[in-house]
Every structure is written in structure tokens, then in C-alpha cells.
Length: 296
Image 1 (cartoon, rainbow, N blue to C red):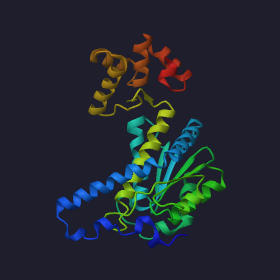
Image 2 (cartoon, helix red, strand yellow):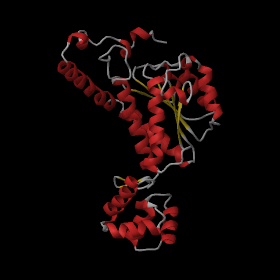
Image 3 (cartoon, helix red, strand yellow):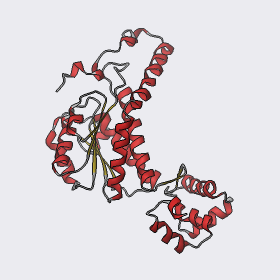
Image 4 (cartoon, rainbow, N blue to C red):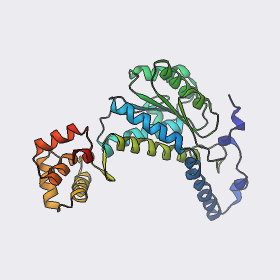
């Protein structure tokens, strides 16, 4: 395992050696400049991200789960992405899972030492009954977190596909996983504070993985969130707007059709575009495995 101090995520950034002496504007300008390196670093690993999306989509189509596992900032980012999937894509809460070393309390508190246990990484996956239809994404900016290594190792043992996201090359988690996404944005503005560029890098990659795998299983029509759940006033309005954009219908038609479809945006869209009733629309959507374009 590479010595921590020699990793890119731990090196001092030569552009911010006098960070404590900079004016606020100077510091902000440099932070902004450094943040631009995040997208560039991700651009270099698009092939690996593409492969990961393909695997995740395949596993979700099997009825498996997308499971994120990490510690500290990395773990929190996984939990956050998992939490956003049900309202955005209408996924069941158990379909995208975020595990963090130290348990859910670690989302808001630092649970010291929890990330150092390989065994706990394994046990947390056992507790949710990991199986070969699932896919495990291990997150660690350093790429060497024992909790994540233990989780990926166990997943490999039971033939569950594994993906690693790290911000250092030749990482331990990358070597453990079947697919290694190692995007390196360089040393942090504040030395070793991987909640900064490394955190942004991981968040942007997670955005790609979850969004495009959901596209792959039919959760998107055009660029619209057609499985959004209208669970509050804002989302009811958004559902109406989505139906209107997808069909060119007026708001009254969208509202009435949504009511007739029990609030199911996909069904409402198919009803309007094909001028059919709810039951026929439901059947067409089932036959197309949830993809509106195929149903049309």
C-alpha cells in the first residue's frame, strides 16, 4: 500500500503555500481555478465510468441493488446519492443503498476508528444480505480505506460486481475492484482536506453513475424525470410540467390525465400521446419494460 504522505490527495498544493496570507478574493480565485481540474480529471476516466454504468444498469435490470460503501466524506456522498434516487427516479428505497462506516450516525458525526475495520465493511454488506445480482461501489478518496477494502473483498468472494472510486492512481480499492475509476484532481487547496476537490470529484462521478443507470432502466424520457413521485406541492407541479413538456398538452389536460393515471407520470404521458386509457397504457409500459420510447 502506498504511503499516505506520498499520495496526490495528501501532497501540498504549490499554489496555496501562503493560503493563510491571501486576501479572500485571492483565495477564492485559486479555489475556483483548482476546482476546474475536477472536470478535467473525470474526463480522463470516462471509459471506466462508461463500463461501470453498463454493469450497474445490467444488475438493476436483474432486480439487484446499487450499493455504495465508504467512510467519512466519501461515505456521506454515497448515502446522499442513494437518498436522492427515490424522489428523483421513483426507485424503491431498498434499490439504491448507501452504507457508511460507523452506521447512519456517522453521516453527521465523526465516528473515530470505524473506517479502519475491514471486517465491518464485510459485516455491513452481510447485514443487508448482499447477493450476486447487486453491485457494490466502494468510495475512498485516498483509495486505501480498510472498511471499503473489506467490503469489496467480500463482494468479490460471492461474485457480486465491484467498482472502486478513488482520487489516487494504483489505489488499494482499485486493485480490489473489478472496475477501477481513479480520477486524480491533484493536491487540495487545504492540504489533505479531501472534502474539497476529491469530494467534488466523487460526487460528480456518482451523479454520472446513478443518473445514467436510471436512464438505462427507463426512468427518463427525453431528458425528463418521468418517474418523479408527486409527494408534495412542488413535485405535483413538477409532474404536471413534465407531462406538458413531453406531450405538448395544456395544464388542465395534464392535471386530469395525471389524476386518471393515479399520479403516474409515465402512464399519463403514454395515455396522451397514444390517446388510450390507463389500463392499455399500463400494459404497453409493462411490455416495454418501463421505457416510454419503446412503448410508443
